[in-house]
Amino acid sequence: MIPYMITIGDAIHNFADGLAVGAAFSTSWKTGLATSLAVLCHELPHELGDFAALLHAGLSVKKALLLNFSSALTAFLGLYIALSVTTGEEFQAWIFTVATGLFLYVALCDMVSDSHAGFPWLPTPALPPRPARERGKVGALIQGSR
Image (cartoon, rainbow, N blue to C red; front, top):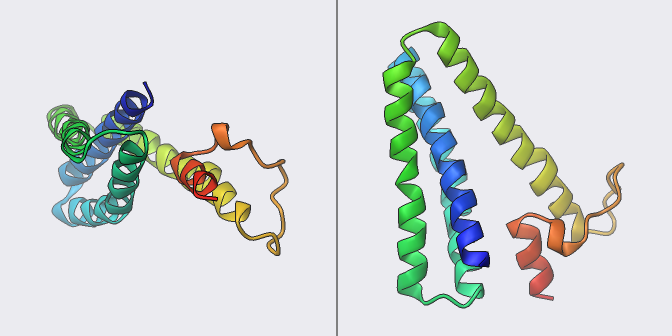
């Protein structure tokens, strides 16, 4: 069940990335290139983390690669949808708003709270730390390795 939850979550995430890249390219090629580079920089470690989580869940390498690849294809779906509907600035603004919100959520809620878990000398966040079962994939892998 866990591998499929990871794959579905990753598919939704990749779809949103495709929307962001498509909206960026419909604005200008420079914005599209910058957004593509930003998505590449955050997707590479994300996909490696998903692959490690799928292997940790007991899947074979072949099955983990297949699930990871199938979830990555949803980025193209998001790209094509964004390129087809972002002729108006209103659609572009909505897509950029949602994509920015997703990026900020992942950065601030998942990664920052997980980075404090292994470093007791850092100041603790205002919220109490979440149990391992409620953390993101990175936190669960870190907790599982101890």
